[in-house]
Amino acid sequence: MRRYSRITGTGSYLPPRRLTNADLAAELAAKGVETSDEWIVERTGIRARHFAAPDVTTSDLGAQAARQALEAASIPASDIDLIIVATSTPDMVFPSAACILQNKLGIGGCAAFDVQAVCSGFVYALTVADSMIQTGAANKALVIGAEVFSRILDFSDRTTCVLFGDGAGAVVLEASDTPGILASDLHADGKHVGILCVPGTVSGGQVLGDPVLKMDGQAVFKLAVGVLEDAARATLAKAGKTEADIDWLIPHQANIRIMQSTAKKLKLPMDKVVVTVDQHGNTSAASIPLALDAWVRNGKIKKGDTLMLEGVGGGFTWGAVLLDF
Ligand code: UT7
Image: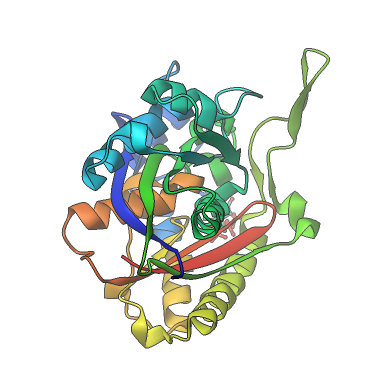
């Protein structure tokens, strides 16, 4: 009998410090950086974001989300045999945030590693976990997207610092006789490295380069709209489904205008699109599992619904996962 993987629990965590656009605009004004609630809402749909306290790390946020997902799946942490954390803001250069998080859950022994695909990280991590479950390499996985993007923002650059937030989302993915994950489609094109990057590294005890986020927003916007449509169509084709089979589209939460144009291209009404960018901002790899968990907990996503998850971001990377919830 074929093995599939299925999501059996979801969880999320947002650090308590919430800044509305007005709060952030006031903080930035004190540094001589001018922005406004009107500009941010009109261009992005973002109204608020959460920032982690200085001593809080990606693995702290991820562990909280993971605990909630385990509770929702009604399994003890000790049942987990695989942890994958999607993040671009790990606690340390090494070890991985996944190893640190594993220790926080008190479940040493199982495989644990990070996936680095920026805002596509969660769909990459989910696809890897699904593949490992299908082959029998794992039975019960925790797949987590967690970020402290506030640490890599340049707060003198208003074109980027108003867009991002911190948070974490998690799912428990278990082996199952029925799907579950129906199909996925992953891509990258490294020729676009320069349009979205943090061009810094550590060498000889020094930080080399400029370790803050740089983005050519318009170039990213244009690429994102095209590849999100392509990835959704490719994934539907692999699963033998059409747009009409999608109950909920859960796109990466970067900009409401990107989501609207993706929905339009896929002929989906906006009431089938999960939108949390207004409350979370762009939380990179955390945005999709955060959005998923919000819609599971508010009762809109129901057991058996067909979900299209879509990520796009630095690399350039993009991809989609179609699943029966
Ligand atoms: O997570 C990875 C994926 N990332 C994305 O998907 C981001 C994709 N890109 C975007 O979402 C949009 O391109 C942005 C939201 C980043 C920018 O929106 P835009 O409509 O492309 O604005 P723009 O860059 O063309 O800037 C328009 C104007 C400029 O002023 P001038 O040159 O027209 O006088 C900017 O200086 O808006 C100005 N501006 C701002 N004004 C107030 C840029 N940022 C701000 C700001 N507050 N925060």
